[in-house]
Image 1: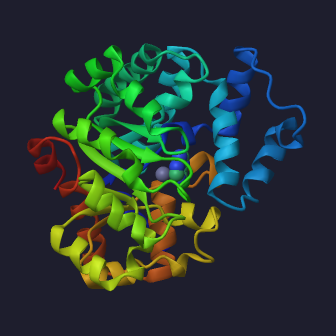
Image 2: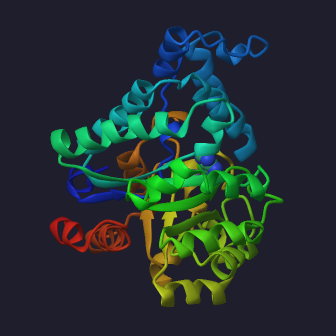
Amino acid sequence: TLLHPFLESLPKCEHHLHIEGSLEPSLLFELAAKNNIVLPQDDEAFESQDALQARYKRFTSLDDFLHYYYIGMSVLITPEDFAQLAMEYFQKAAKTGVYHAEIFFDPQAHLERGVSYSTLMEGFTTARYRAQHELGMTTLLVSCFLRHLPPTNSISVFNQPDVLKSYRAGQVVGIGLDSSEKDFPPHLFKDLYAMATTLKLRRTAHAGEEGPVEYIRDALESLGIDRIDHGLHLADDEELMALVAKRGTLLTLCPLSNVVLKCVETLSDVPIRKFLDAGVKFSINSDDPAYFGGNYILDNYCAVQETFDLSIDEWKTICRSGIEGSWCTTSRKAEMI
Ligand code: ES4
Ligand code: ZN
């Protein structure tokens, strides 16, 4: 697009990036070999990087993608693996004009396969320090809980001493809710979010990605969230959309993710125009870029521009909403504006 240099130069904030979803097939195979991880032998997708990339082009749903996402992350074992994963993402992001990134990670998915919380924290801390000092990029960690597991499991993980310590130390600023959405309504996690509220943690949740707009209302009413991840289906309810606009709650849209996971038929079905016209604040994000054709944040910006032909002022508004809706300090926000 003609606006590519402009979009690249904008001060971008990323709010919706699953760090495990930035695991490129090349690093996946490299770490599998290093850590002696045997990938599924009954699935020809794992025969080569090319086969895996080809399979990634044929996702049929969120759950079809999640199957590969959970197998992919099984190669991550040591603190160095997590540091390398995060640092490679930070480098790509910084190169395309990301000033500040708030990244999700899935502690339960790693704990369940025997990787300790301290392993994750040690790796992420190394990468975050390097991002700050080598790239001038600020980063925050948001711990996501898996809605396909029993809410009691999320509560025990939340209350692990080392997990509580990461909250108190400010290493993790907030919590989110992700994984399979259908049949797992937000209110199931009311108690988890009440505990997060008590600890003054920031709160967000995936809602209205594959699930209906009712799940967005439920998340707002039951969880006390200050952000909505995706919120794609918010446009299905004019009244709720007006309420979200009035409250100034930020949506973290992931347009190319929605196309690849068949949540929409084409990019033009993402209600970007409706949200702009209704005054709904949103940021544009990459979700799981390594699984979605290697499309990172700038690719999402460019694709949106190609489809919606936004004005310079509209792009400035989008980036300003992203900065203002970030969970960093007020002084960091002032630097970015
Ligand atoms: C996810 Cl795209 C998406 N939706 C829900 N949960 C997720 N975990 C990683 N990517
Ligand atoms: Zn997501």
